[in-house]
Image (tube, rainbow over all chains, first blue to last red; front, side):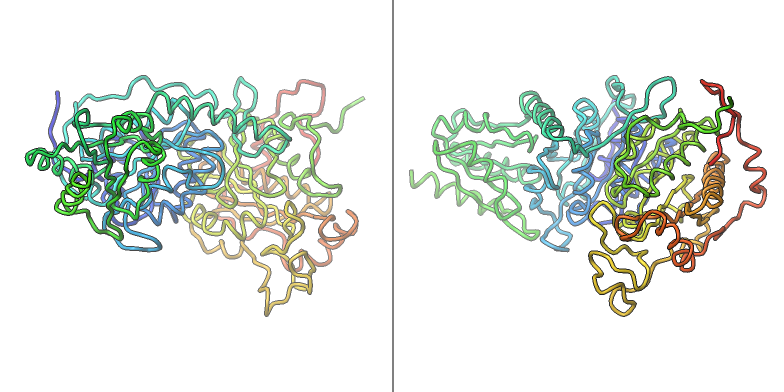
Length: 353
Length: 272
């Protein structure tokens, strides 16, 4: 039976993880994700899981590393400055091919920045973040329901591909309250075996988990395997939402909380007779290049709207190439793009043509 | 003829990359002997450091994971919490534990994580070419203290065990050395006691082992052993730094050793 709750996005992430059989959480306080850490301290106790308030973000991600080595479904969460500290651990998780789920409730930067919502960690999340040739799956929810749903599913994806998965949301999504609905008996799909995990070499030969490959050629081989995995993920796990784009003259490309503003703008513009649509990447990596290129092929123009100086816009331009025009509108340091500004910009873009 | 000595079962046949006279191979073997005698190889999950011992998983025939530099106790924490009935230990050098990983080691001890820590103190960074470590002695020349370590510029040798003594979560802390057969035997007893502390679910324990690095001390292996005796243990006194386990005397510890099932004919206890 489906039950309805009213909760914050942070709490929805926490409950999504618990329902996905995550029983290990390590975190460190940072705003605007504190509700999630507090929620996990209660829920892990109730579910006989492990909650650790770590001494640092570095320790938290490495505790998750250890839990993952021992085959547990493990999660950590933080906000931008804390996620920077976790990058070393994420690179090691990627190198050791360990699954893990990381929640980033983004705030303004650079540096300590502020505690207002932002999308300025897009590059860090989608282009590697730490050192080395690696990718992680990045999912961008746009409401409290998706904070739950995506976190719930992230564990399956992480286990399936042996890869860290990041939920990239902003301070609005973390802190806002909305209705959340899920089946009381919701359970993860069959949790797959992890024959690579370390649980003690009883009745089998010893195993090791490592990212160090000194023998010439061996590290290249690991990287080739990683790239093969990433290619498979790109083919199968690219996610997006479009509304309506077939007849659109201009498509607003945005993700997360901003995509909700974009949707309102598109509806208002349609009422005024301007054919606007929205395209919302849900998986930021893998990025829906093909799908955007398909729309660009019709000569549709694009307006990319972000809470950043323009990060995702680079991927949109890579997708569009020279097929069409790509404009950008962004706010930085905690500013939120306003409906009026977006509508005015689209009117200008459509008038010039 | 009775076999007096052989390779521990939980050690692989791989040839180590360690320099001649290095203490790591010796300490690896002592750990493996303890694991064999306790018959726990099938329950061990070890955490190797970044440093000279990074390749320990090639030499140990039990489950071993890598950890980022200094994060070793955090990784061990994650493993142990998920697998409380397994035996989890970290193997860390002085750069890993006493420099980049100070936060992790102190907080793992303070939480009283039920793990064993083997801390190998040789006073230099070996893997990267003999740089100054936090444990380098005053007056010692290294690649990055070419005018010797001076207290006013490079600070003092750090005594981690003495610092950790005040933490209620740490129940057993001992410093040993491997510069003589007698000290090797004591090292083995200390590691045995640390593992038994964990098996008894008593909490956090750590053994600091003074170890030679002839290559970066610029000495022969023999001179290195003599230096430990004459200089190093004056700064890092050997013996128990903390022991809140009165019920676990060393004789009791030895008494808990299970005879192992040997594949070949040998005495049940090899001599360290």
